[in-house]
Image (cartoon, rainbow, N blue to C red):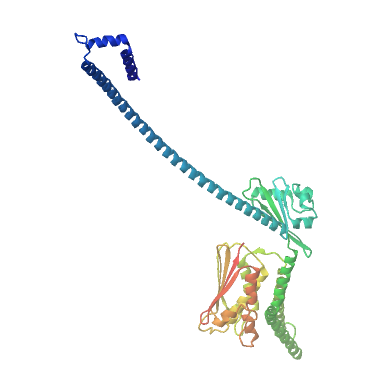
Length: 485
């Protein structure tokens, strides 16, 4: 811009006549002629000077332009780098956003599926609760009804619309569950079961379940009508008793037959003694009368034995309708041994002649059981042992029965072991089947082998276990497990 101004100024000066006249005088000789060579040289010099200045200016301008270009290039490169970084960041953000959207869509799909499943499960559970064949009543802590299924509607005649949100005892005052029972279940945080029955009419089982891990405490009450089930169970018990009556009758007939035969024998001997005494005219107090008194005393003892057997049978017949009662298994065993001593005998061996070895664990707990039934089982096993011991050679071994009673974990274990003739493999396989016996027609042997009823009492009535181990040359051991709870 400055160069341009200088050139314009010079041009104006050259155009000025005064200035031109002054300059031209510098290039005239003495004669007044103009030396154009000087003018040309001077003009060239001026021009060269101006061109040099212009060239230098251009060089500096080019350098500034080059620096500016470099700066612009650096700025452009920096801008391009920033653009690339921003573009990469934007692409990454877009990808992250895209991934987030995909995950969000997936989570939404899962949420929708979960919601559908929850609704389906809720509907399914609600249908189950509504369709349950027993009364289901839900209560909150204040005793207000939160659940009221269809069976509750049918039994009470109160619809769910009229029951939900209302106080249970105001809505259904005839219910047998009391507020104190519900409160106690909530306080103890344990289920409570209440049995309500009238013999021969109805039987209800009422269970109060405290709700676990809920924000607000509450309970669920289940009321089940078990009348038909209890009646059916009683019928099954009676059916089982009837089905086993043949075995029981034959066993009892055998037990009763022994004292009755002894009574008849003593009575017949007494009659014969009276006839002999009448013929010989012995005075009172003599040997015949004393012998007669002894015979009658024996007959009386045998009559008591027969009466005890019948009483035991009647007690057993009543057991099916009674509750289990806690009893000392060792005392039941001792009482059974006493009965066996008076009642049992084999063909050539009386039970009183058998050596009894007792091994009872100290401080045995009382066990819930049907005492008369266990006595019947123990008597049957002792009878089996007596018959097996009657077949051995007593000169080679002493007839012995070992009885071991102990407690292991939550069960009482009873072992009855004898050293008589053991059972064969076939006998062991079928001994607990009804009416098992060998091919012999000997009644006593057949009765002694029948243990299906004993097995039924232990496994079904007492929910226990019964097994045996036997060897024909060593003897037999009966194992019984009876739960203490």
